[in-house]
Image (cartoon, rainbow, N blue to C red; front, side, top):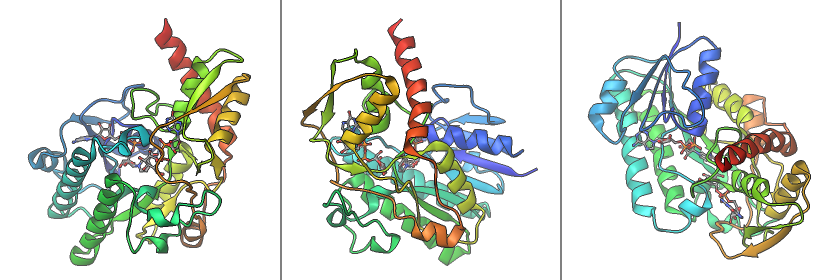
Length: 322
Ligand code: NAD
Ligand code: GDD
C-alpha cells in the first residue's frame, strides 16, 4: 500500500487531496493546526501540530513516504495578502514550514514533495494590462512579485528545487492560480473572490446591491478544485519537476464573475464598486507548458464549477442564518 503525508490537511486543498489519495487506496497521514472545518477528515492518521516546530515536523515525517504534499501555508485572498498587515507573519510562518518540511523529508530519505506555489510569484510588471497579462513560466525573472506572499512562494519554490539539485530529491513545484470549490474558506476575511462573490450574492435580496472591490474590470481566472487535484497528482507522478502553472485560462473580469454567479442564483443585482485591496490588474494562466509536459490541461468551464460552489455556499449562508 502506498503511503502519503499531507501537510495542511485541515485546509481547503489539503483536505481534498486527502480524499483523493484515500480514494486511490493510499494510507494517508494528515497534519495541520486544525481539523477540516466542513467535513470529517478521511485521513487514516491526523496529527494536530505546528509545522513551524521542527520537532513536530520530525515526528510526522518519521518514515519514508511515497508522496508528500506540502499545502500548509499562511494564506488568504486579496483581503488578507494585499493589505500589508500580515506581511511579516506570512513570510515567517510559511518560510519556516517550508524550511522544516524540505530538510526533515530529506533527512528521512523521502524522495518526493509536491509544493504548492502560487501565481502571486509572477512579476507585477507583466500583470498591468487586464486584457493581456503574461504568466508564462519563463517570465518569472527579473522577479518582482506584488506581495510578500508572492516573494515567499518564489523563495520556497527555489528551496524545494535546490534539494533536487543538491540531494537528488524529486520534488515537484506547481504555481496554482486561484482555486475554488466547495469546502473552501467563504467568510472571515481570508476568502477569495469566487467564494466572496457567491456569499454576497447568496446574502443579497433580488434587485438589491452587492459591494465589489475596485471597478470590477480587473481580470482573473479561477480553477475548480477537481481539476487542481488532477493536475497536482499528474505533476507529482510525472518526470517533470516544474515549476508549472496549474490554473484555468478562461479569463474573466470580476464584473463578469459577479454576473455569472447572479445568473446562477437567479437574481438581478446592482454592483456597488468600493475601494478595497485589488492586487494585480490582470492575471490568467498560461497553459502551454503543462500541455507540453503533462499532455493535459484543465478544461472544465468556470460556469460549471461556480454552479456547484454557489450551491454549497448558499447552504452555508442559510445554515449560519438560522
Ligand atoms: P488553506 O488556508 O485552506 O490551507 C492551508 C492550511 O495550512 C490551513 O488549514 C492551515 O491551518 C495550515 N497551516 C498554516 N500554518 C500551519 C502550521 N504552522 N502548521 C500546520 N498547519 C498550518 O489554503 P489552501 O487554499 O488550501 O491552499 C493550500 C496551498 O496552496 C497553500 O500553500 C497556498 O498558498 C497554495 N495556493 C492556494 C491557492 C488557492 O487559490 N487556494 C492559490 C495559490 C496557491
Ligand atoms: N477576496 C475578494 N473579496 N476579492 C474581491 C472582492 C471581495 O469581496 N471584490 C472584488 N474582489 C477582487 C479583488 O480586489 C481582486 O482584484 C480580485 O477580486 C481577486 O481577488 P482574490 O480572489 O481575493 O485574490 P487574487 O486573485 O488577487 O489572489 C489569489 O490568487 C492567488 C493565486 O492566483 C489569492 O488567493 C492568493 O493567495 C493566491 O495565491
